Image (cartoon, rainbow, N blue to C red; front, side):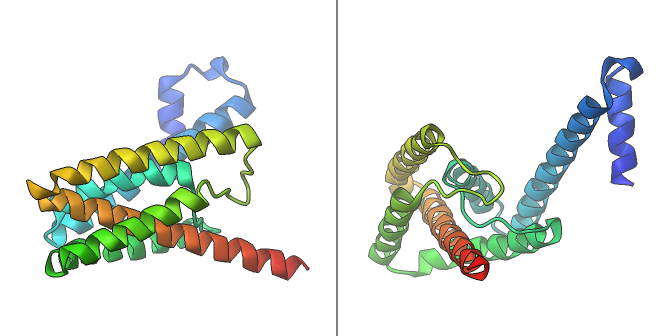
Length: 194
């Protein structure tokens, strides 16, 4: 059904003869990715709303998306695996946002520093199907570190609005875990090949 809707949207937006079959496939793939991304965002925000942490989830998502895009990490092998991973990461993030206010501030900051150090040192992590050239690695590392510094600087406003700090700590924690899981997955796959 989604495939049919995608084809109708592409046919509506583009005249029939404007694209070759290969270009049409690329447009359909791009539209499919946009729909999946929108679905993920709506799902994450909806779950945050249902669990009473909409604002924290929104802040987490903004901070996490920026770091995740450039630092890499675990990628599931299928769409179903991706959705399951998204559900688990989202529930963990919301739980962490709820729990962090109950924890000593110094433990939260310590966790943030450890996770930030992991992200700083391990990023970027290549996806198996998208190896990075050396120039891309340096660029992604630079952007990841810039986002870490910016989001870390935003934590200063944690005195005014603690939810900001908790969202940053949560985003960094989830991303550090995703990087660790990605490293573990690539190590296991390499060992299987040997």
